[in-house]
Length: 133
Image (cartoon, rainbow, N blue to C red; front, side, top):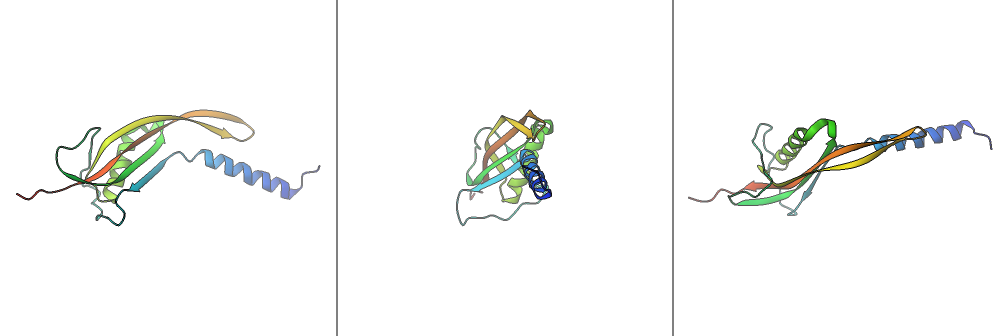
């Protein structure tokens, strides 16, 4: 079978899709818990508390935030991404934060496979509720 220009274009397109899909490790997901409930976004300098535990004041659950990135970016970058997403959805704290690492294999078609680590972080975005005095 002889390779034509169309065959070569198709092979190049498939290789490009495989190569680019292996590079998509940085993610930022949000799952809203209470459908129909939304809060105004907070300003970019609004403080957002991150804690691996619970808060000691009342709050309303907004949703679950999950972020990931390559290990060279570090967990500080993940914290920044989580805070930015929390501000976007109107939360002022993220509780029960959990950090993890996943090992991913990047395959560069026809050449080699290279393992690398992906850092992950997730937590419950909440909005504190003011209690009447």
